[in-house]
Image (cartoon, rainbow, N blue to C red; front, side, top):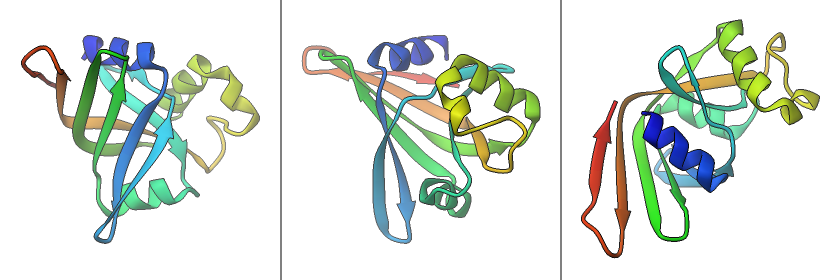
Length: 130
């Protein structure tokens, strides 16, 4: 999991895909965190993305460092613990102008049953599960 986290941090931006009915939805994200032994992302509960995840928790993210890409798929599970929200926001303090660990909007989610595939045009894909 640490390798996946490090790669995502290096890329800075990843694209998260969710499903709305039968329509895929993809958008850029930048938050990733390890807390309590799990890989987390963050969004707001009022966003369509959150509503899509609650309706269907299967999601996939993808990022590219210029040579290699990562596809991470799994279920996103909401964690409403204040400690999880605080840790995420402590690692992304610029989000504190929009989010707080004490508001009803901040949402942190962790990957469950995750499969990460590292790939490039020059090497065989490599899979990591956590």
